[in-house]
Length: 258
Image (cartoon, rainbow, N blue to C red):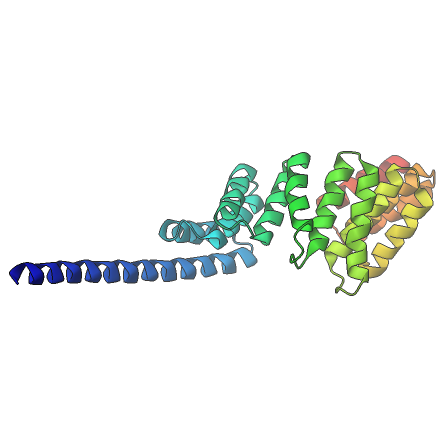
């Protein structure tokens, strides 16, 4: 009888310990979520150091949380620590292999590292995923990767797929403009200058104050021997994005044309 009571008491102690442990873990996860959400607010405000501080607190409390690792990857990418960015995006994917946003973010980080082939592997996994809601971003990045590899046929194919996705009904955003710009650059690289200029015109119609498009257009005008048009396009870059890095590049290019 006494042995039975001891067994029941032991089971009760174990059960209470498990409950206490579970409650403590839940509290830790809630605190981690609070730190993560605060970190995301700082991230949105571009206060990257403050964001990193909060996200590191969150990671310490909940190290197996894919959302936290994805956020850390974003912060490190924006702080130009691509080694740590890639590490955290890969950790997020290891925790949740279906985490499409983290896969796309990892591919973006790899593109910044000029790891074209590795990025293409991850991007292809996204385009093969039939339930991935935003394949246009993967197509855009694939176009860019192949453009950098000078595989212009593949670059053209993927840029066109990104553009088609928008023209099939998705709301046009800056990625649509970037896809048009990338397609235009691909046409320029392959000597299809009239097509390039027409494509840049479509991009400008969608986003008249996006400086990169004017810069690419100016380069195409130069290649076509239209120096005056090139100079005007470079000046337009300075007009829409004064005091920017691309405006400085445009100013130097415009001076060379004089």
